[in-house]
Image 1 (tube, one colour):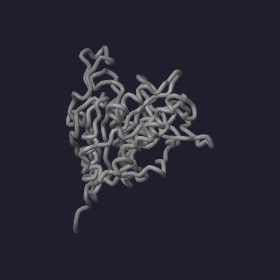
Image 2 (cartoon, helix red, strand yellow; image 1 turned 45 degrees about the vertical axis):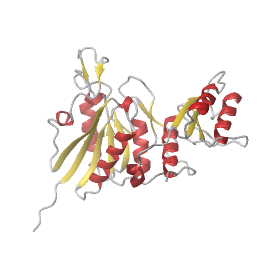
Image 3 (cartoon, one colour; image 1 turned 90 degrees about the horizontal axis):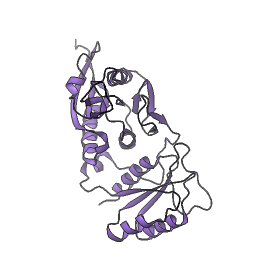
Image 4 (cartoon, helix red, strand yellow; image 1 turned 30 degrees about the vertical axis):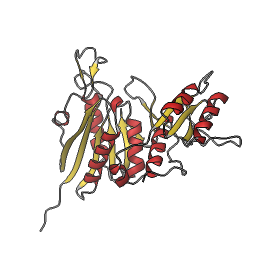
Length: 301
């Protein structure tokens, strides 16, 4: 009689504060991210009946997150999620860009198995580091029978990967969830194969509407090094200064894709009859940028 297979959980590490070290543990705000390897992060972490596997996909501060790391992370996720005996995957990641990575992974993969992204606000050698607790919570969550999809788990709270937003710079629970959990229907999502094969990513720039926004930056960039697309974080309901709007309309006429979001932390953008530029609904500006990047990637030959 065949013995029942031991369930496996895989931890994919990318660095971040959870793997950071402070030069003086009494001053944890002064630290360098991505210093502790995943093997050390996993010391003394065990679960009965579960085999824990770990891989170091990257070792960076998440402010330096790149398309290359996204591709590597996606490839390893696909590999492990296809294994019948892998119950779920935990990803350790820095907090600064976790909302972008989470949105990207959920949109492209839409996994039925659980993928829990976790992090820390204090480095690993801080006396009261939150990293070990967050990691254990993530490992416990992916073992739940009802768990699925990409989520971010931090400070005891669970956020959907396509709705998480970092809204505080230093408190232990820096995340909130916004309401924009759907991908805009007008924007296509590339296949895993398309993402992994991509060698030249589209370029999408992000600009902010503000008092006296005159569109000068948009016009200057379009004249000398035009990007493939623009996301503008508009005021309120995605509104734009008339001068900035005119510059973006000119960029659109020149072939760039333009998408409006809101610089407000909640609510997103609702359609109005007077709209002249498309919007990203409830997505944050950085999520809208990822969404437009993926859409443009689908159009590449």
